Length: 230
Length: 316
Image (cartoon, rainbow over all chains, first blue to last red; front, side, top):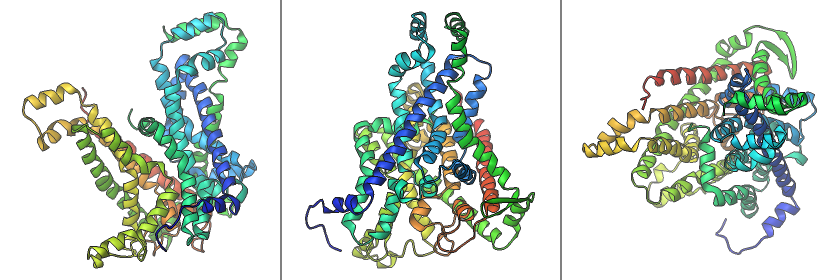
C-alpha cells in the first residue's frame, strides 16, 4: 500500500467494463426512480382525497395511514418474502418498488395533507366552476403549487431508497437485478486489495447523493426531520 | 370555504361518474400500504403460532415458539444476550449521540454565525449508505493498517491501540460509536428545531432577569424542550431495538466475535433466512415469534413513554 501516485480513470473503466457496475447503477436508478414517482403520485391522490373531501371515514383513513410510520417494516420481511415469491416478483425490481412505495406512503401523506391544509380552496373552486374535472384540478392546478412539499417528500424517499440494502439483500440476489449497495458488497470481497477500484466504486455509489445535497442541502435537512418535528 | 360546500359543488357540477371516480383517488396508496405494511405485520403475528418446515407452514403450535425462545437452551441465552446488546445500544446512543448533539445544537442556537455551514457539514455522513460507512470505518479501525491505531501509536499511546472489531470487549461499542457519528447530525437538527421554537418573549424575559448559562438551560430550556426530548428518545429507542444494517455491514449476521455484536435483529435474520456460514438453521416460526416480541417491545415502550412524558410538556 502506498500513497496515490498518479491520476487515472482506469479504475472506473475496470468498474464498468469488467464488473456489471453499469447494470447495478441502472437498477438503483430504476428502483429508486419508479418508487419515488409512485409515492409522489399515489401519495398526492390520497392526500387530496383526505384533505379536500369530508367523507365520514376520512379521519380514520388518515390515522390508518399514519400508523404505518411507527411500524418497523423490517419485522414483516418474512411474510413479504413469501408474498413476493407467490407473485413471482423475487429477483425483479418490482418487489422492491412495491415495498419501498408501501414504506414511503405514510410519510408522504403526512407531509402532503399538512401542505394541503395550508392552501386556500378558492383556486380549486374557480377551476371547478370553469368545468375542470377533479383529477384535472389536482394535476393541473394543485400539483404545480405543491412543489416545495413534493420536493421534501422526494428527497427523503430518494435518500432512503437509494441507500437501502436490507431489502435488496433478500429480494434482489440475482446479478442482473442487484442494486449498487449490494453490488458494492461483492466488490469489497473481490477487490479488497485493489483500493483504486474500491474507492471508484464507493464514489459512483455516493456521488448522486452528494451532488443533490450540494444543490439542496436545506431541503435535505428539512426533509429528513420532517416526520420528526411536527 | 367549508368541506361540505366543496362536496356540494362536486355534486352540483359533476356527474354520478365523477363521484365514483373520486373514491378511486386513495385506492392505489391504500392497497399498496395495506399489503406491504399492514398485511406483513399481521401475517408475522400469525406465522409465530405455527411450526414450519423450511418455507412451508406446518402445524398450529400455539405459544410454543415463544416458550422455546424464553426457556430452551441455547435460544434463551442468545435472546437475552442480544436483548442486552440492544439496551446497551440505546443507552450509548442516548448519552453519546444525543448528548453531543444537544451541546452542539445549543452552541448553534446561541451563536448563530456559520450555523448553516456547520449544520450541513455535520449532517453529511447521513447521505452515505450504511454499506459505505461500515466499509470506511472498518478501514479506519483496522488493527494493523487503520488510521486510528496508527495515530495512537504515533502519539505514544501504543497500549490504547487495539483490535477494535476483533475483540469481544470493544466490537459492539465500536459499532455503536460509528452509529453515533452517523446519527449526530440528525439529532442535532431535532434539538435545534426544539430550541428555536422557544418563544422569543420568554428568552428575552429571562435575559432581563439575568438568567443565563446553566441556570438558563435548567430553568428555561429544559421544561420547554420536552417535546424534542420525547421525539429523540422514541426515535433512538426504535432505532436501537431494530439495529441491523450497520452491525451487518461491519460484522455480518453472526454476532462476531463470539456473539458480542449479536442483536435481536441479527438473531431474527438468522432464524428467518439462515446464517451465512453455518450458524442457526432457518426457523420461520422462531423468527416470526422474535419479530412479534420486538414489535411488542418497541410499541409498548414507545407508547408508555410518550404517555408518561405528556404531563411534563408545558402548554404555551
